[in-house]
Length: 480
Image (cartoon, rainbow, N blue to C red; front, side, top):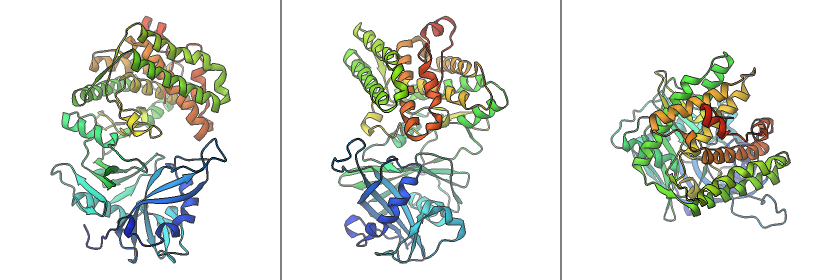
């Protein structure tokens, strides 16, 4: 790493560093796509760790911060504040920003150690992004930060970085056409599946997931926090969502691609089952699983009045699962993707499908995201995704989603040996649970999209129609 790189830990940070940034961050942070506490003002910050990657007194300063954002609890206006979510920030400082960095502006610092300088989101800037890759290449140790790389894989210098501008819950920088560095924004201590699972799959020899080339962690108070993962960049790849919408716009079906996606999903599941332990879920575990689904349904119905008329019918999907378990049915559970949909899949120019982003649903606790799950949870996510794509088409596409669902399950059966439709009760429960999650998410974050999951829960077949699936191999609805 550059000799100019210095480091501090929290106790050695410049006095007043966070206080000088506080008023700027209160305005800037809630506007970010990856900020989880939308709708609640930030009332303050506490510093978890701070590291100078480029000294603050230099022409260009680079500060790596882990900060906890404090907010008022959702439903208790008079309740005391609780420790909030922890966010990873890379803040650059300059005397003035060049015009090309205007979109990255955080604000002008008026007091404290950074007074007179301009703060901005450093990932928009070439030099700070280069510092991160160089740190991984050299396996640097900077304060509490540890940069690692896998084996002796070459990481060339001189790769030009660019920040990806697609809307997402983290931030990604592409280096040339060789690597992509995903920086997690909302972070928690512990083993993150976004690093854990791709590493396990790479060591298992699964080609469906880009193998990590390096990663960034923080060692704090005896625990490890995963902050970022460097993976190969699939040049010329198209994500499944964009490809599906493109085919819909042309009036083309997506059957062949859906079938290939089903095969890719099954191959990943098979490799994960080989690489990591599997468990058997009996009556007690399935009852707990079904109760959790019911609890999420009740929470969503309280928050979204439009859902309430359909809650009793939706609940039957979960009680049926519990009833089947009470009769002695068991299920195998394993590690899964956890948040699978079309946007988490990449198709290379050669036609090869890859699965990416194994973080799981970021809103769930880390321990829950790392729990073994029935593989049909991932299947249900993809089925819902076909529904989202069909409803996003500029013109109606009757039967498009249904044909994709059938093809996906067929492809899964070809590669995995078991058709998800042969387990209709679990599949219906998982797909219904996913639709309920979507209703709550869209109501809170994207109200214009609320009609998509509501259209699914309104259907009498309640998403997955088990009789149709048994008769002709198709299913009743779709997903995001």
